[in-house]
Length: 199
Ligand SMILES: C[S@@+](CC[C@H](N)C(=O)[O-])C[C@H]1O[C@@H](n2cnc3c(N)ncnc32)[C@H](O)[C@@H]1O
Image 1: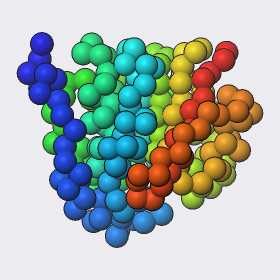
Image 2: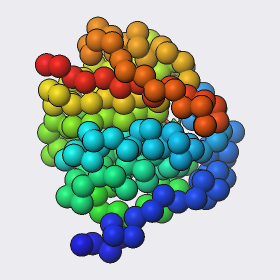
Image 3: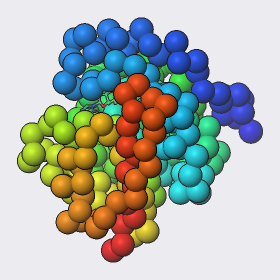
């Protein structure tokens, strides 16, 4: 077993805080949070059978990488995690994750399908997203959710953790109704939505 995978742990919240505050002060609308994800939120996203069984997972908006650590801790040793982050300032924190399963692209989530092709990943099992669908233009939010739907295998799972429920406006025509899980022990409290791609 690769040593960097064997030693995989979730880094302490304080190690991600400075990087998030700096990025938030520069681009508040895009970064959308000033506090690192709590362990409760990370577990609600990553401790799922679909993540444990996945061959390929995509994460949109990994930020400082708390959720990324959680996903890698639960994913198979032979799996791949492609993370797409728009805020370049997070490279300081994401660059600390030395795990051969992780590939990071600093770009807009709009380019999801291009990156799947570039990385020869084909269709994926799970997409996790923390990008703020409520504060982006509607046309962009619609295009990103359409790309997520296209990127998933039938039976694949889309998980989005959000402050507001706008995401449902875009996902409902594609995926149908969501399952929701409210996470109160996070700053701010958030809802984790999930959908399964039927066809
Ligand atoms: C709620 S934060 C993520 C929190 C992070 N996962 C954690 O564990 O702390 C949302 C992230 O989405 C990123 N983001 C916002 N819009 C984006 C877009 N269009 N494409 C890619 N990333 C985006 C932000 O830069 C930010 O890092």
